Length: 192
Image (tube, rainbow, N blue to C red; front, side, top):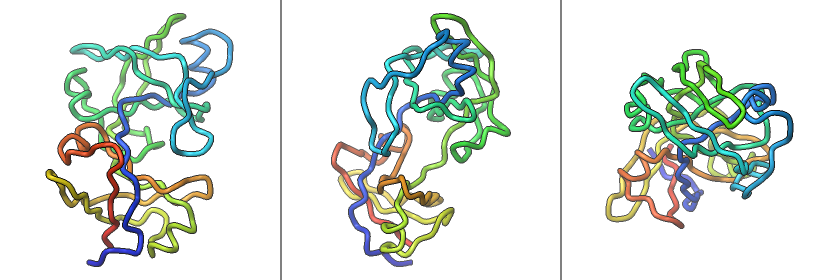
């Protein structure tokens, strides 16, 4: 294994959130468009002003953020701790793959819906083609990353996701981020 030329990819903690179709938005919020509360790091994406409650057999989580814009699928991304608290068996899955997702109830101010939409997202790196070329990695490649600091770690099975609209970011869920002691401003190195 070797460390690549990219040694400063920022690490972001991806807290529980929802991606949603326009039709499902209508059920939860009535007619209308998404409205950005704040931009997030990936260009064109944002956290919406609206939030939902999600419910499983053992409990519910309130104030779950919605990431826009609209998607062709509805997906709830959770940490394993969240899934256990809700009493669901959410599979570890690549974002956008909801074929085996756990069923969950999503509650908005206008209504609620039940969807097979809950997953625990696999750790992944968003990266541009230029950054990928500099690092010597390709789309869908599985790599490891090194995280420094007092609780530093090497994490394996990290999916590289290359797209012209992406900028380099390692996304970990809250369980992974807390385990590694990730704090704002930390970066990672890709290990091939």
